[in-house]
Amino acid sequence: MRIALITEGTYPMVTGGVSTWCDQLLTGLPENDFDVVALTGSGAGRPVWEVPPNVRSVRLIPVWGSSASPLRPTPRRRYWVDATQYELERLWDAALGSERQDPVGRTASALQHLVGISDRIGLARSLATRGSVAAIIAAWTRHLVSVGEPPISVADAVMAASIVDRALALLDHRLGEVNVVHASSNGPSSLLALAQSWRHGTPILLTEHGVYLRERYLALYGAQLSWPVRRAVTAFLRRLCQVVNVRAHMVLPVNQFNARWERRLGALPERIYTIPNGVDPLTFRPVTTEPDLPTISFVGRIDPLKDLETLISAFALVRERVPDAQLRIFGPTPKENAAYKELLVALTQALGVAGAVHWEGPSQGSRPAIEAGHVVALSSVSEGLPFTLIEAMMCGRATVNTDVGGVAECLDEEQATGMLVAARDHAAFADACVLLLTDPQRRTVMGAAARQRALSRFTLERCLARYREAYLAARTGRLLKPEQDTPVLATVPTGPSLTETLHDGAALDAAALGLSA
Image 1 (tube, helix red, strand yellow):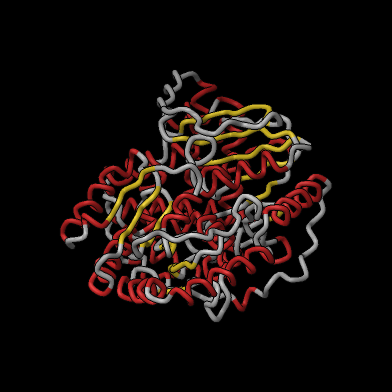
Image 2 (spheres, rainbow, N blue to C red; image 1 turned 90 degrees about the horizontal axis):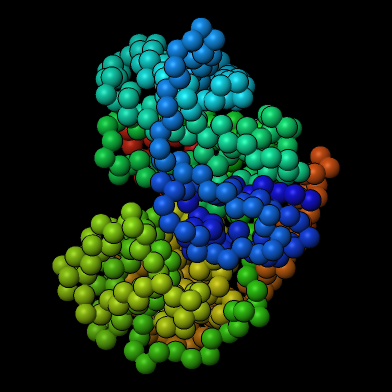
């Protein structure tokens, strides 16, 4: 079987949990041939993963590469540019308009027609000739000004169009003849999958690790963009995510937190199958030693989604009660997060803990970081089903975690296999860390229970078997059979309210969907 695996900002360009998952699929299913299609930022940089022999091709597509050249005017080209404008007007009318007029169906229709225009003249060149600016202004005026919103400025419409049109231009890229297209994220990755499906009838599988739409809300919350730009971009992304969830042959989230979002975004419950991440128990054998000084360790990229401000703030409180405590932070700092790293370093200095916080840089896998601490910490504001946590559990280490994404699903309800606190609550995080650092017996019992849970639920063999079944089922138009021990969606903790983390346009989008977590 030939499978197109589409990634965005992950494999094969950077390390991390999603990249690890991609590598597991490629190396663990050698009977299948894969074409890796990777969306990157500017196209700079080189792959950091060595691809296995069954990867037939690796194609890098820079989303923010050189702009396309506008079309030289001819009567035929003007016709297609006008046709593009018509579909953009339909697209933005659906994005910003009423929920009562089948906006998802109208978005899908507009996108499908844009694929047809791409096949005729190239959508990127048509968008470079006349993009979404006029369509955004018209839809905004028609639907939002009439209910009391201020008009959108031309400058804001230009900014929103520059973001969305870059994504739409991806429809020009063709994936070739494959049996299944597997998108590792919603959003731009899934635009490629939709185009492939409309052109060739190829079944789409969607696996979200973090919820793409939720993470865009969180990112836009702190972005240096005006409210109208955020409102327009999130409106488009929400409609796109809805279309993908409706169109996908199967939706394969890594946890049931994601599955709840995907159901709200239109995926049919009978087409959602949760496949938890897994690790190899032979690679992650129990850790039997502890460091000399009481130590908290973290492993992951230095990124705002990991909320290391909360971890460092919690550590400052830990030091007040455990004076010789240490914090060791393992992981790379992406170039785009250099300023965030500087902010964190300044925070350690302001809190007086700079000498006890150790920036270890990238490590060869997570095991060195797991071995380095008495406790492994995960302070994120967004996660899928984090490998860091599963690997620490498989190694028999006690953990302190924030209740985001599928983290609660990794642990037991009594927190005998790991501790769970609310996101951004540095005081509660500190209390949990102190409890474990000062109680060796509790750490030992918790670590042993964590390994047993990981062995029963999160093995790599079990994970790969389900993806193998999913690929075979998709190729023949079938659906998966549910696993008997899959928990019921209703039992999943709801987590924090969306309205606690979103505002402006993002909050309006959340309210429109009626989401509570």
